[in-house]
Amino acid sequence: MAVIGRDIKNGEPVNPSPGLPGPSGVQLALYAAAYLALTLGGLLWIVGAWYTVRGWIIGVNLVAAVVGIAGRLAEPVGWWLLSVLVVGAGYSLIEIHLRPRRAVYGRLLRSIGWRLLAVLLLLWFFVVLTDIGSTYLSVITPGAGAWQLAVAVAATPWAAGVWTIILTFFPEGLFLLGGALLKGARTWNM
Image 1 (spheres, rainbow, N blue to C red):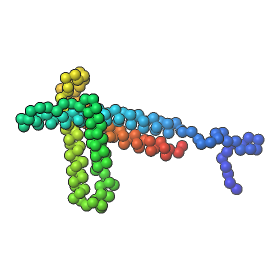
Image 2 (image 1 turned 180 degrees about the vertical axis):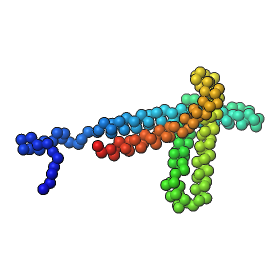
Image 3 (image 1 turned 135 degrees about the vertical axis):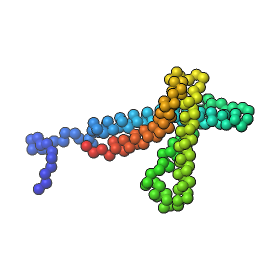
Image 4 (image 1 turned 90 degrees about the vertical axis):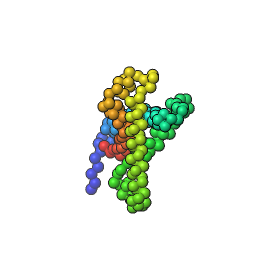
């Protein structure tokens, strides 16, 4: 004999909610948190990519001035601002997908060998260092029309360092968090 947990009215089973059940409160909260993390990550990512590109331009101009090369690179304007997206996407892809993780590096070690794995690890390290360095250079060198807050952050070394770390690592972390929350919301069964 099987026991079925259904309401019965006048001897007939009652189906209180025909069709598929709707999302639970926890599931909706997970979706909301995921989209919030992805939105904040996207906004910070755009700002961080702009700081990275601007820092590279400042750095190239500094090296050119030291070496004695006349001329300066200008900050991107107009359609050239799309370079921010390309450079930012390249940095983010390398920082996220090549970050040291046992599962990925163990698989890579078996398939490509330790020499190529060391090259990939050095590439990841170089990308992270240049991202931090170019972002920091841009943060401590506010432009002519910069907000007063940006000028104050640039004048305070610890604030410039904190803002650099936030712009460098938080967007990718928020993307990973948002993806994990979306996965959790889709698989929530309560």
